[in-house]
Length: 412
Image (cartoon, rainbow, N blue to C red; front, side):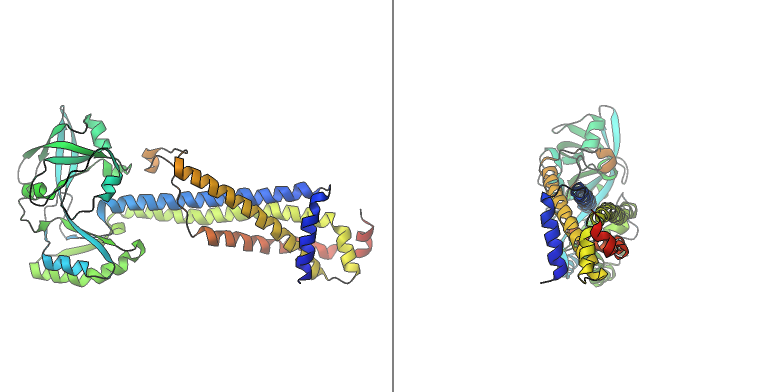
């Protein structure tokens, strides 16, 4: 058996019956580590949850990758040809999970002499509406068709509140493409993602209506949204679909562009990338908290156990051996503190997941409660805190070499 580990375990287990100053010092050190671990655990869960929820919302509006004309804009004035060959080639590409075509046209919704500008997105039966369905606050998503007009539209809560309209109301929507055209549509559903940049302008109707408004044929669209198997493989997937898109451009004499979602909305994703730096700041703070409290406790332990150190030196123990014993002792403190912190943090995170009790301002944070998502990052972060805290303990343990056996044995 490792002698140093055995001695450390004995010292740690027998301290409970002693009335010494080391007891509160060890307790404080353990809770200092626990508090730091709680802060780290919850902060990472919130940061990861926040990043993933915002990213998923942006992807919900535009997919992982988009194929569109070089000259396209929000008004969708330059269509692309979505033929069966292109669709088959894209679906057969490695990494592609789903494709869906869409059209866009600028419009203006009018209700009770109030108006609001919109980008009306036309979708068909191939469009995955699960994202919008998960964010519907009122009404029901209609069955949008490629061949018939639904005369129904989905608008955001932002637009509904601004125009004071609700589900079931009929409103006039004016489109400027090729002259002023009007359509009377019924509000079928209202969604709310709290992503203001999209909520304030995006509405959804059937692709048949938007094609007719744009005077396009049935195989024309503003673009194609592509969903990939994994977000981190979007760049590889773009390279894989390049040939299919290039062939389609040559076949239909069109200039096509391919962009990932982070290229279409760089400011949003750059902002999310900044949050990654926060993880390192949190790690440094936790290490400082754990290191300071543990070092303080170790100093007190060494001073209190001076007589034990003197005896060990007198019977031939080396400074390195005694230092190793006290480092093991401190590791027990760090491990217990981290265990307590992780258990408390997990409980608090689960409570927040189930209840959403901690509310935040959706206008600032794009969601109404603090998001929680457990991440594999927590494992290496915990390991890093433990390893670095242990390395830091080497410095104060050097105090042992200054203790003289003759004086320490007499010390009480």
